[in-house]
Image 1: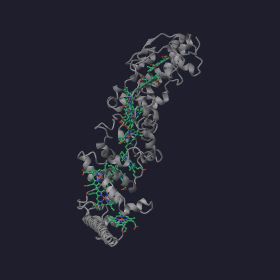
Image 2: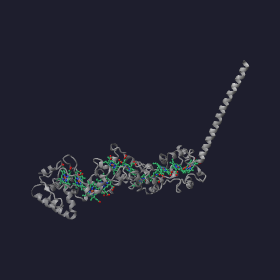
Image 3: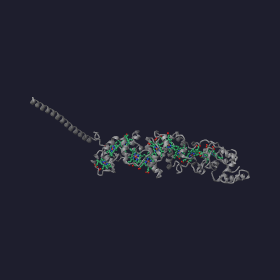
Image 4: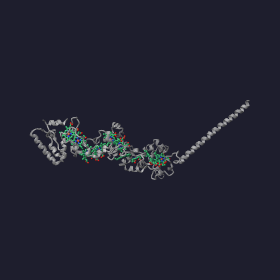
Length: 451
Ligand code: HEC
Ligand code: HEC
Ligand code: HEC
Ligand code: HEC
Ligand code: HEC
Ligand code: HEC
Ligand code: HEC
Ligand code: HEC
Ligand code: HEC
Ligand code: HEC
Ligand code: HEC
């Protein structure tokens, strides 16, 4: 038997060629695991490192004593349990190119593993059914629930629970190389989260198959995505800031942070000042009272394609619900100026109403309350006074209560038009009758003469 025990392809071959017998592993005492190891187990390990080991005779005994001696010294220097339990397995699996019979990689990078969050565990803390060498070809799948009951329970109730092949590893990556979430090497480090979720939510085919919007590209172009990916801003919103990590629910679920009723609170975890204003306004109060027709943050800003907002956006936005006010606004000078496409800072809905703390005219704090109009209009119209603000931004000549003067003028104009028209019609009709009568008279006079 030579030193190059070729275990690759089939561990049974390993034992065959290296001539060892299966040895029972003690599951509890890691110290004995090492001592009970098959001779050639250690032998092979050294051989791969180029040592001139032969597996027969006294020289092996010598080597064994030497190795055990070194191990003995190490016993005092390192936590025993870890070192032995891991090296047992890593003596074979530590070769990162190792493959099983089917050609799948079964290598584990020992250095990376030891530096990872699980580096303090023994391999068999997770691979619990491996108790002896040789171990079974097919080992039980690892159960994370033993140590992470909360995450497993939360994931089980999430949208992802029904997705085939969606395991913990689809977000956390190689389980032998998991790093704390605060470590930039972690898949779930804030700056890496969008890419992690994007492996599926940036794949147009996956999205189409599950009839979802392919949100990753929109998110990356948004102000949040830009802040995260280009500015490296950890405090910007990543996917989990709005969706959570494990208990991710569809927005139709009332428990979801992305359900309409919960959106102000979700955005408000970061935009605390805005959400306070919003909740004090009509829309926030309406949502709190259960009127889902009122807008929440995402109705105006979208969820994934959020850009730098401007008041210019507000006209079509506010108008999509307040259609009557949009119509009357369209009739005003402000709208006409803006539709000319000039660069003048013309008044849009939110210039007069605000964007978040929107209040009715009857509220004394409202920018459109009569006593505040001079200030509101004065932002753009220097020297605006009480008579200037009599101007009605939503004048509606068809509404007698809202715009009585305009309504009266419109009414009077209508009357004048009607009167004038009536007079001329009557006048024409009478004129026609008169002319017919005259013609008849003239005709009979001529006939008398002819006779
Ligand atoms: C003597 C070498 C050797 C040692 C020591 C060893 N393994 Fe293996 N292991 C193998 C080989 C060879 C395979 C590939 C088996 C195959 O071809 O199916 C394998 C496969 C595996 C697999 C994959 C099984 C599957 O279902 O695909 C796991 C998990 C595993 N070993 C874990 C361990 C753990 C944990 C230890 C330590 C307690 C350990 N091994 C110790 C040689 C070894
Ligand atoms: C935190 C738990 C955990 C620890 C600790 C752990 N593993 Fe694994 N291991 C897994 C999971 C999860 C898989 C994926 C397959 C599965 O679900 O069973 C896996 C798979 C494997 C496989 C199959 C090939 C592969 O990479 O998919 C081998 C071999 C393996 N582990 C060896 C080891 C060795 C050697 C150690 C110790 C150095 C170790 N494992 C420690 C969780 C763990
Ligand atoms: C035997 C117990 C055990 C098992 C089984 C186990 N883990 Fe862990 N896991 C730990 C310990 C201990 C930590 C470190 C906790 C800490 O530092 O607070 C950890 C940490 C983690 C972390 C990183 C937490 C952070 O700080 O960001 C993740 C992610 C993780 N485990 C995922 C898994 C997954 C996925 C599985 C199943 C494949 C699994 N673990 C199986 C014990 C275990
Ligand atoms: C959809 C992606 C995704 C899946 C699937 C997933 N995780 Fe996580 N996990 C995350 C993210 C993102 C974080 C970090 C942010 C956080 O703490 O919520 C995280 C953090 C963790 C942590 C650290 C928790 C803490 O507060 O320190 C553990 C432990 C963990 N996951 C275990 C698991 C286990 C076990 C599974 C499988 C049942 C799993 N994860 C599945 C995305 C996921
Ligand atoms: C392995 C692929 C994969 C990864 C990674 C993944 N997802 Fe998913 N996700 C899916 C699939 C597939 C669905 C559709 C589930 C269904 O049809 O019910 C889904 C559904 C969702 C939904 C619900 C959509 C709806 O119907 O309302 C949300 C929200 C979601 N994922 C967010 C995330 C977030 C956030 C992350 C990262 C932390 C993530 N996903 C990571 C595959 C993935
Ligand atoms: C600022 C908060 C926020 C961020 C950041 C965010 N989402 Fe969303 N997401 C939402 C809201 C709110 C919804 C609910 C539906 C809507 O309003 O479009 C949603 C819906 C979804 C849906 C369902 C789409 C559908 O068609 O049903 C998926 C999938 C999703 N998000 C994944 C992600 C992923 C992946 C990321 C990161 C790349 C992400 N989200 C980032 C707030 C956010
Ligand atoms: C995790 C924290 C966080 C959450 C949650 C969050 N945001 Fe943001 N948001 C930020 C940060 C940080 C910026 C600043 C980015 C920059 O300026 O580069 C920002 C910027 C914005 C801007 C642009 C502001 C400007 O002046 O240009 C808007 C609009 C916005 N967010 C809306 C929302 C909405 C709507 C939600 C909920 C659906 C939300 N945000 C959720 C952190 C968050
Ligand atoms: C009715 C539409 C509407 C709703 C609802 C709305 N916004 Fe805005 N938001 C706007 C408009 C329009 C602007 C830009 C005009 C401005 O600067 O006042 C804006 C500006 C912003 C800004 C930039 C800072 C600022 O004040 O200029 C942030 C951040 C923001 N909104 C976040 C939110 C959040 C968070 C919510 C939910 C609590 C929300 N918005 C609800 C319309 C809305
Ligand atoms: C998604 C539809 C929607 C959008 C978009 C919307 N609103 Fe509203 N708005 C409502 C609803 C519904 C109410 C009634 C709330 C209540 O009092 O119950 C309301 C109430 C108001 C009121 C108070 C009216 C009154 O009679 O008391 C004002 C002012 C107002 N909105 C202005 C705006 C402005 C300005 C914008 C754009 C920045 C806007 N709205 C965008 C739905 C919307
Ligand atoms: C030049 C300033 C100005 C602009 C621009 C403006 N409004 Fe107004 N809005 C007012 C004033 C002043 C009132 C109160 C008097 C009235 O009802 O005409 C008002 C009243 C309203 C009301 C009823 C509030 C109540 O308490 O009854 C709504 C709703 C409204 N506006 C929506 C809009 C929408 C939507 C737009 C954009 C399409 C818009 N406004 C543009 C100044 C403005
Ligand atoms: C965001 C700036 C802005 C605000 C706020 C604003 N306006 Fe204007 N307004 C303009 C601009 C720009 C014009 C067109 C400029 C011009 O040609 O004089 C205009 C034109 C007008 C005109 C017709 C032209 C004129 O100067 O006589 C009237 C009347 C008017 N605004 C009334 C109001 C009233 C009343 C308010 C408050 C309810 C108001 N505006 C608020 C910007 C604003």
